[in-house]
Image: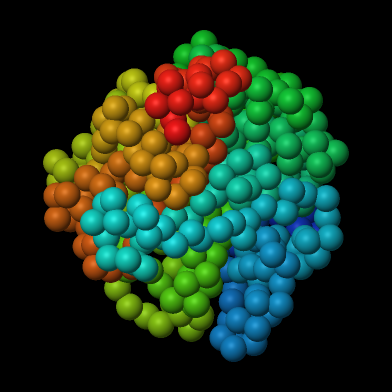
Length: 440
Ligand SMILES: Cc1ncc(COP(=O)(O)O)c(C=O)c1O
Ligand SMILES: [Zn+2]
């Protein structure tokens, strides 16, 4: 059954690990090896992503044995106001903060009392983790920052990715700052805001005639071809490193809550990587003794027009059936999510749920969040807020518990979603006209 669940990866190109074993100078801090999520097989750190034994996905295994909880907490608190305060828990060298990169993270955790009132949550219990405050206005800067260090360590000269939009911009900007070439791939019909944000940093931006799953398939082919030699695809051959960046969301949320686990977290799902690594981050904090061990629930959020994971969850399946996406939430439009089965495991293990909302509910939720908290979210944020509302209405999410809702991107990139929002009135520059418009 497990092997069946990984069928998607089995068909991808699997690179050899020779480059890492022949490169003893790789220094990625506490990262000790790559370990298969399915069978536990370990290989040295290298630009590989699938297990040579069972094709399961590889992830970073760490050696945290030297850490003392109190010392580590003090070291983190004395660190910079960005993700590098958590460098001791990430696959990056100790001097990472001194290298040219975008220094993302340490975004605001907003106590959202007005939104809480609107959704029927107890005051003081609802928070929005607002990751639109990152350098390229989405959480993707966190993951790209890790992949950039891996690319440097493995000697890649071109940074690349398959993207639903936000990742392309994050890669373009990170490569520009680091002085690397970038060439990124997106579906050809993305929102203008996403296209401009990806193109403006001066790298190459290629539109593929097809959806994200077609783009991703093409990139996997390119990796196995001489044309892709020397290329680090942040979310393909550097995926184990890239994915770790999402742990920093979990670390920040807990630290900003006063080194406390939230009771409930609502996370958007595209490939599912972010959700699985938020869980990994929370588990690490518990094991390291940085937070008290107590139950928490993770909820996944999708748009109805691309809901392969919520559909599988609600049907009680542990296999995710691919879908053809059709939603305004284009950043989440991955019909064949690589980490889908793991999301199902985590939602079930923690007692959470995976839910979806219609495009209309997404737009409404964007407006509610903007109106109540002054946060303008992209469609992915509309998905999480909309799903939070639905889960409360259905009695699935407990409104009396501490709940964190993620906003992972900026509404300025998806202006079309709220087209029609505009002027209240157009008047002549006179008090008479102002009064006549009923605005006095
Ligand atoms: C704004 C935004 N939020 C969330 C996600 C979901 O990321 P993941 O693929 O890790 O599930 C994406 C992915 O592109 C995104 O752009
Ligand atoms: Zn394996």
